[in-house]
Length: 121
Image (cartoon, rainbow, N blue to C red; front, side, top):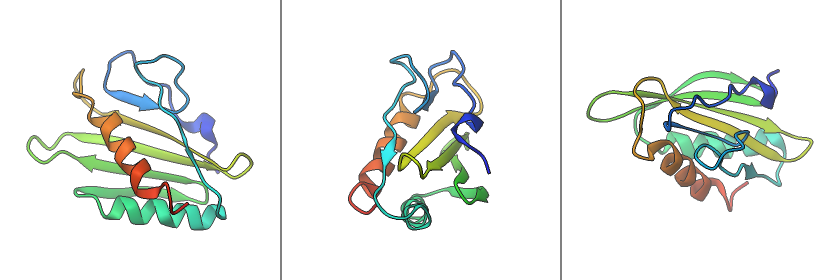
């Protein structure tokens, strides 16, 4: 099983956000959950299924890896989640595979997912 240490650090470019980052440009708050981990993971998966152009790439007990593809230029972003049952925290990293900037897309996406799951987990 992957732990939050499995989330790679963000590169220096401004096209990545991570709950493990410590600098303002990349740092973002994790999600908290109250339910059992398996239930929280299903809520998270349901929220992501409701979003366009997503593909589940890998799934383990406490880990999810998705690809999000942009509409126009078909850029792929990798989004990973680690559910830490000890602290009831969902850590995540969302990063563009290519390019330098992302116009805040990764941060906006993660805040949208936060809104979709906040009251349900």
